[in-house]
Every structure is written in structure tokens, then in C-alpha cells.
Image: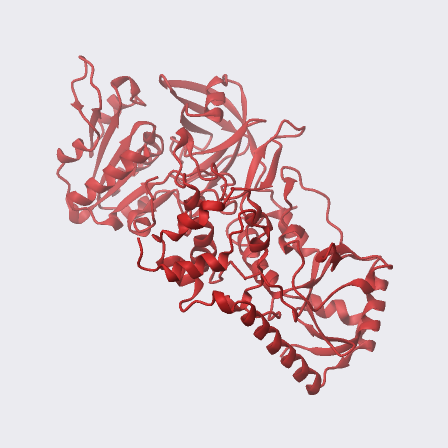
Length: 340
Length: 272
């Protein structure tokens, strides 16, 4: 049983102000009609929006930088807090962790930032019209992978501790924390249930009989892939904005230092991504690359890690220049099942 | 201090051997001893130009120097071919899974190689020869485009004298002096009688040869679990992270480059 407390919003914000000197804190705030992570300062602590959908930036940007020199170990990063992280991003981060922290080699750059960062999640009560976590059996509220979770209730939060790191973090707060009453917990459960129903409602037209992973696997030969790829312009927006897309490319530069190499985010949607010497390309066609992204999320990573790597955050739906909606593509895979 | 897996070690080009008009062997002395298993690969960096994976062609028992046999195929290999003795390159690794030759003990081993694909197979062959008593029989079938394109020409006379080793060679296009087989390397397989109940086959070569070589082995009665393939994919990090060398759910750099055929045969388009 995780420890659950209540803290008023006023007390919480007072606490944040006190720790601004110790931590660099990023929190979701309204920017140009959307939510984006902003660096907290005394003047904007109270502008943070906790209980709605995920921020524009995928969580990975804090740990795997879009571009980084990797042949020199960089100075230790600041102690950082990411505030208001949603469940879709937490699940995606678990995929990133598997890639960068597990296996024979650990990525020291990713590991260093991950170690220095505290994740304070929060419930999502107000999904966006592109959110589809419920279609993947995910919930719009955190169930794990956080240090602290904040569920907005009454004029404060139901605060849940998720790790020993989180426990240490709230130690100075103990005086302000009250043990959460069952009434409060019940209130939260109701909000959570309503939130999930909202996601289900938003996605009514995209609901499929079979699960997304089984459709992607079974409909490998569907003509829908070619159809879907017709408006793809290979911009790579979907992979860049995806919280679980981790692929990168090492590039040797003419920079100073020994064997200087820079690591850039890469995209399996680009023509040359898989091309080998002498020009042979296993995914020469655009639709093959588009399909690969789905296979990666719904078939390959689940086979590796037992985690469906698409968590339904919906960012790729918003970012796509060709208006490709993943939910629609998979729905059509089902509708066109049997066609060749 | 954390080990930085992206940072190469400095290596000096000690010697360059011209193998064919477009293939050279580079003998490298690395700053620190590199202990690899036969069939594993290393990442070679040319400073400011790029990095690419190569499987050493030398035996792992030779720890002072490693040898890479490289065909000129693009920018990086082109630059490498221009490198002179004494030049400095970078080496990371070794990475991946090599040939599980301990699993071949007491068996007949058929090695099927094409072109520069002989490079990793030479490392394997040398390893097998060092432990020759442990194996029943070694058969090497090697094909090249023309006699001139055969790598390690100087090594074959010595290999031909080895106990338990039989060698068959073919060229796609013979010259008047060529007195061995003419034709694709797969025709050599018809000339060999292997004990299929107790034999493994190891294949490395250009993609087209890998495909038809493997299919021919299956035709001959080899079971997929007794065929070992060296898969070639685009690689960047070599660490199982960057995603470039994906082969279905596998990453060639960490799950390969050597794969048992039964594990990958159902992956779509493996031959591309």
C-alpha cells in the first residue's frame, strides 16, 4: 500500500517556492493555448496546471537530448524535478529506461539525468480529443513509475509516494501533510473513473473489436498501410514528438577532441534509416517505414519488454503534417481485414 | 567514473594487405587489448568521417593485434582504403554475439562464404583449426566473382594441407588459369556429402548469396536450427540502443550479428 496524504494547494506551492533554489523545476503551464513545460520561478509557481492532459513536449526530452556530444562526459546536471507528468508519459519512459539503462551497456548521459531527476506525476482528468490511452487499456492516471503523484482534489492534492526517493523528498513537508481520508480517496476514484470514461467517449469511433497490437500484427499485409502512407511527407514529426521513440544516430564531427561524436535523434521514417553499404534498403518504400513504426510500438517492443510502446498520448496525431491519425489507420486495418 | 560506451580507443594501422582490387586487410594495434569472441564485431571510426561495424578476420587468440578485412563500398570504407600504414583510427567493442563454436563440438561444420563475407569466416576457421580435434570435419565452400576477387589467396595453400579441413572454391567467372569450379558458390554444395544428422552450416556473404545459400541448405536437408547466418544491417551505436539494425524484434548488434536461422526465418524480408 502506497502512502497517501492530503496537502493543500497553498502549502504545496509554498513548499515549491522554498525548493526553487535547490531544484530546477519544470511544470506544465498554458502557452499559446496549449500546455508546455515551463521553468518554475517564484512568479509562476501558482500558474501550473496539474489535472489536465500531458504537456506538448514528450518527457524523453529531459533525458535523451535531441542533440548531444557523447564522446566527452558532460558535467553533472542540476537536480531537477519534472512536475505534472501524466501516465502516458510515465509508461513511455519505462520503454526509454529499458533501452538506455538496461542491457549490456548503460547510456551514461541518460542515466546521469535520470538519477538527478525527481518525477512528480499527476492525474489527468481532462483528456484532449487526440488522447487515446483507454484504447490501449491504459489509464489516465499514474499507477507506477513516479516518485510522487498528485491527484487534484478539493483545494489541494491527494499526494501519493511512489519511491524511496519520493519519500525522502517529502520528509520536510511532513508537518503540512495529513493522512488522506477514505472519503478523499473515494472522491479521487470517482474523478478517475470519469476521466477514463471521457477518454473512452472521445474514442468511440475508433474502438476496434481486436486490440491494436493484434491488428497491427495480423494485418501486416493490409493494403491500408499504403493508403495511410499516401499523405506522409517523411518529416519525422511523429517520431520526434513520440515519448517512446528512442532511435538515434551517431555522427562523427570535425570538432575538437578525440573522435568527436554527436548523437542526434533519428527517425525510422527517413529513407536512409536502415540502408546498408552498397545501397540496399530493407524498407525502401514509404509505407514500409510507416508500418515499421506501428510494428515497433505494438509488436516488437512488447515482445522485448512486455510493454506496448504506444501509450496513447496522441502527440503524433497532432503533429502529423499529413493528418495521419493512428487510431484511424488501425481502425481501417480492422475494417479492411481480409483485403489484399 | 562511468565507462563511456560511445568513446573509441585509439588504434594504429600497423600493416595493410592488398587482398583484391577493392578489398584490403588492415592490421590494427589497439591501445588496450581487445578480447573478442570469433564472430563478434567492432566499430571502426575514421575521425571526422564516420563509423562502421566490421567483424575481425583474425583469430581471437591473437590478442596483440586485430585484423579487419574491408571492401570499398562507400564513404567510410573509401577513406579507410586511402589510409596509410601508421594511420590512426578508433575502435569500440567488441559487440554482439559471435559463433557459438562450442556447440559445434563433435560435428561436421560446413562453412559457406562469398566474397568479403570470408572475413568473419576466416576468424571462425582459424578458431576451429586451433581446436581441430574437437570437431569431426570442416568443409569450406568459398565463392568469389573472379579468381582475382578471392581474399586470403596466400593463406589457402597452407589451409589446404590442414588435417580434417576440406576446401572447395568457385568463381562466377573463370579465367583460363582457373582449374577449380566455375559457377555460383551454391553449386559447391552439390559436390559435398555431409552427414546431415550431425552437421551445422555457417553462412556469410552478400545478401543475395545468403538468401540462396540458406535456401539451398534447407533443400539439401539442413534444419533451420543448424544453420548460422551473419546478418548485415545498418548499424550506428552497436550497443543495442539506436534502433538502426532492427531485424524484427531483434537488434543485430546485440542479438546477432550471428543468428541461428530458425530464430529469424519468420521475420519479414530478412534477406533485404
